Image (tube, rainbow, N blue to C red; front, side, top):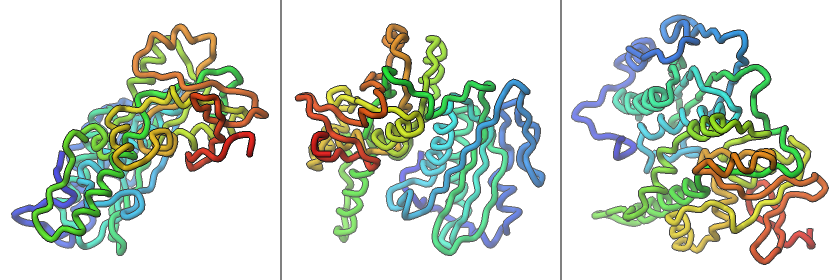
Amino acid sequence: MGGGSFILYMQRTELAELGEFALIKHLTQALPKHNETTILGVGDDAAVVAYPPEMQTLLTTDLLLEGIHFDLTYTPLKHLGYKAAIGSFSDIYAMGGHPQQLTASIGVSARFALEDLEELYAGLRLACDRYGVDLVGGDTSASLTGLCISITCLGMVEKGQAILRSGAKSTDLICVSGSLGAAYMGLQLLEREKRVFAGEKEGFNPDFAEREYILERQLKPEARQDILLALRSAGIRPTSMIDSSDGLASELLHIATESGVGVRIYEDRLPIDHETARMAEELHMSTTTVALNGGEDFELIFTVPLAQLDELRTLEGIRIIGHITEASAGCFLVAPDGTELRLIAQGWPQEQAEQA
C-alpha cells in the first residue's frame, strides 16, 4: 500500500476541474457486487438492499475527522480508507453478524487532488473486496477544515442471534482474541518520529526497524472475522461481545454496565506481543497500562459460559483473561501478588481496591 500520506504525481488533477457528479462517478465506477442482498448499488438516489426474512439488520456509523482521529503526516490515504472500512466491519462482527454493504461520505478541502481521493477509495475498495462487502454509495462535499470521512455499514444476523453487551453472566469466562496494545504502541512510535521530523531540517530518516508489527496494527488493522467463524465452528456462542476499539478496560466496563455484572481480569494473562512490550519499555510505559488503555486493536472481547471451557481451549488465538462476577464485587485488575486495582473507563487502574 502507499508509502506516504500525500503522493507526488507528475500531474495533479484539481477537484474543481471535474465537479461533484463527475467526481463521484469517477470514484465509484465498476464497483464489484459481492452479496445477493445488494439489489442496486451506486447510480440512483438510494441503494436497494433486501435481506432474507429470517435475518435482522445491523447498522453502524463512524465519523473520522482529520486532526482528531488521524494524522496525514504519517497516515497514507490508502491505509486510511482501508482502516475506516475495517472499523465498521469490526462493529458488525462484534454483534455476531456479517457486513454486507458500506457507504462512504467524504468532506474534502481544496488541498486534495483527484489522485488523493483515488488512493483513499482504493483502500476502501480493497477492504470491501477482502471482506466481501459491497460499496453501495456515499457523498462527497467541499470542506473548509480538512478531511472528514463518514462510514456507514449494514450487516445481517440471524433473528434473535445478535450478540449484545448485555448478556454476560456471573462465572462466565472473559476472553480476548489476538494481542492488546499493539496499535497504541504503533501510534506512539509514529508520533515520536513525527516530533523528530519536526526538529530536523534535512536528512530525516525515520527509525522503524523491527517495528513492522505495531506499525501495521496501527495503520492497517484487520477485523476478526476469523475468530467469529472459529467460535461458530466450535459450537460456541458468546454471551456478550464487543470489539477493542476503545481499549480493554473501557470495553469491559461497557459489558459490566450493560450486563449488570462485575469483572475480574488477571494482569499476568493479558496478551501482549513482544514487539509491543519492547516499545512500551523503550517509551518507559507500563505494558499493563498499554494493554488496558490501547485502542484501535479491533480485537474481539467476549464472554463464554464456563461449561464451554473445553471447547474454548481447542481454539488458537484466544486468551482467557478472567471471569465475570456479581455486580457487587466491582470491576478489577488482579496483579500477580493478589493486589486488586479498580478499572476505570480510560483504562488506567486507580489505587488499590481497599482504598476505593
